[in-house]
Image (cartoon, rainbow, N blue to C red; front, top):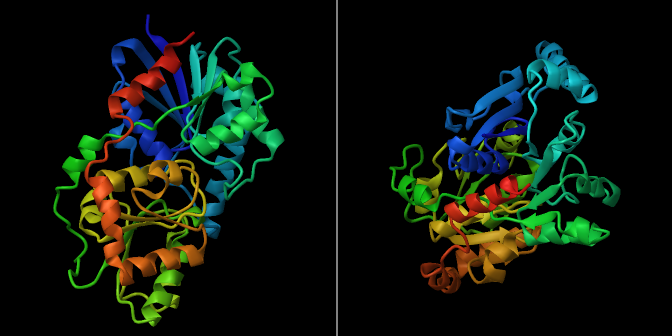
Length: 383
């Protein structure tokens, strides 16, 4: 008999957690599982990548509304109220939209779905949460110790980095709680990355005479693109010519675009928007920059490592672990000054990155796609 699973996530927009979830779903055997994927919003670039055998259910349809324009407010308010009602009265959701199905497992694919899964009226189901962020540093809500401890109501807490694991271990009160915390590697298809990276660059002209720094991520304040632009301007004023390429979209896109113009950087900064294949651009760029204020385990760094890029990254959760404590790339202070120092080193002492290239040349990932998927399936299959 197939195991019945409910997975909840907000949408399938272009974020790391969403990509990881879809990569996992694409690589599990359909003959063993019956999966309902419940989205708050039926939108996102990864919708088309979900395997056809997975049943997609949604509460609302259409794109995310990120503005407060008068004409958008009624729809925005309706969505918020509708989701709040279903959250407060979960039986309406389970008996109505989910048609009374009895699930064996219920999974919160992001930490934001904690209460939705824990409030499930199905008391017999195994409940799993997948933590992708350092909860003490999220931009929308800084979790207190008491709030983080609520996650111990799950049967299993999957964490994606040593730093997140340490946070939960420090708050566990006994061995039973500590045993709930399982460190897993995100599924990452390195073969797909290498194959896609060979595609032609279509929407950007690389200038071989000027270094290009590429940064990839959802355009949220978390990613620190504002810091990157200010550092770029400062370096240009010092006469250090270079270009910036930002790949990604998000609710802060127009703000960063405006900042780019306000700082007089329209000729040296390109905001490409979202592309489902950023790898040719990463391959061609001289440097990859992670300017984030916080992360959980930035998958995009593994993509840059796979493509053997010169890397500059702020010290956020997961970076020391991924860059082997600075053997595979330059780790800077998590500040504007740190980013400035790292980029200036690249521009004035490019030979200093040869050591990283030597290490990257023979580096092998500490996991592969198959092993990561198997590790998650063992958690799912364990009674």
